[in-house]
Each structure stands twice: as C-alpha cells, then as structure tokens.
Image (cartoon, rainbow, N blue to C red; front, side, top):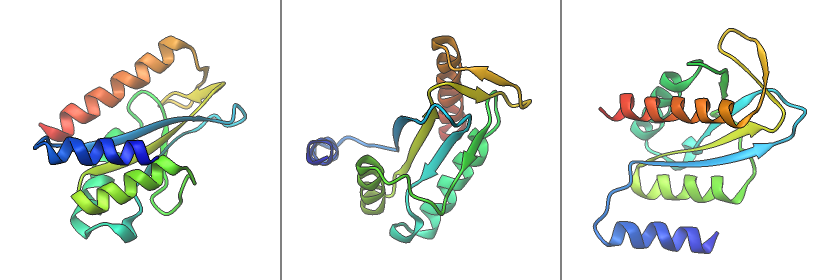
Length: 134
C-alpha cells in the first residue's frame, strides 16, 4: 500500500500526469458479475464524481455486462489508495472486480472466463479509455 502511494506521488512530483487509476481484482468464482467501483464520492469534487460516472456509463455493457456500484466499497486497500489519490489529484479512479469462473455477455449469455474472454474485456477497457479521453 505504502509503496503504491509513494510510486504515485513520485510519478506526479516528477511532472508526469495521471488521468486514470484502475485497480483490477478477481473475486469469488460463485459470482458471474463484473463490477466497477468508482472512488468514494465523499472524497471527491462533484465534477470528478460526474466524470467517473460518465466514464462508467460509457464502459458498461459493451461486450460484457458490468455493474457500477458508486455507493459501495469493495473493502480493499488499493481501492482506498485510489480513492485517496483521486481526492487529492482529481484523477478518475476505479476498482474492477472480475469473477474467476463465468461472466455474462452484453446479451446476457453466461460464458467461462478464459484468457481470450479476459483479453476481450481488456480490449473493452482500452476502447472505453480511448473514447473517453479523446
């Protein structure tokens, strides 16, 4: 935790810019949902909160179903670090929870989480980031 915070602080103090912080996690194999948790709005400006929700809406239900939970916390240290960092700098910050066994396509079909499926989810992330920031 402390090392991640120091690395982020060092990156910015060296004059670099950070626009997005995403912490990718895997969770229980019993769930088939992909979850996206924005940084805690109580730490953020209204403008950053709205930007996060706009990004999340743009990202959801591309090829796979994601649920956005702006009012819940995933309870992990890096989510806290992302929220704290977002509150200090205004960057968008998310924690993504990805199941280990199955996920649902945008059409609602349940598919097993293979490396190819996760590559496809990764491509959705890249497209959403490019569309949002360009």
